[in-house]
Image (tube, rainbow, N blue to C red; front, side, top):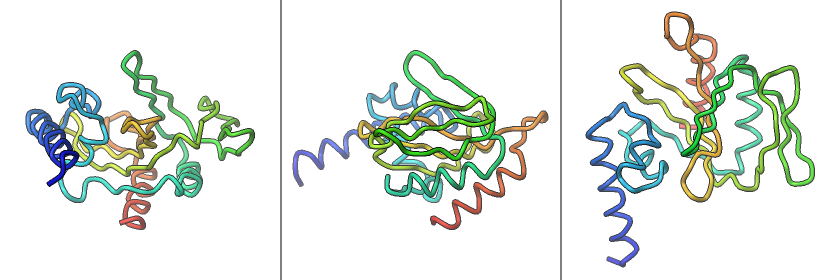
Length: 172
């Protein structure tokens, strides 16, 4: 066993312990508590909860998400959790950026080259099912996340949930 393998196993053991304490908690908070990355916590979620995709799937996954209608777009850092409801514009690439503009409150520029991978996540969150797509950087943190939004009764919106489930099954 190499020293790196031992370090990885220790890190994942800390992630498992944090997840065991609060299995439906905020991934970033669990990671901070355990001194690991959010990717480490995603790695120890129960089997079938996460599907990992390569960064090369960015365009195809984004195009799929852009067909969902309204979504919840979240950027979560140590300083802010920014949540925006709206449809994802299709996006285009120029000058090293993936540019998103259109008839939506969601707009801006994404450094697509910093996307290290994508995670489709279906897990409990504060006692309710939560379905999201995480675009991850090379530090194991989410660049941003796209969630199936909730309706007035706090239930997942059916049209977007069906699209998430179809994407999840397609990539399984």
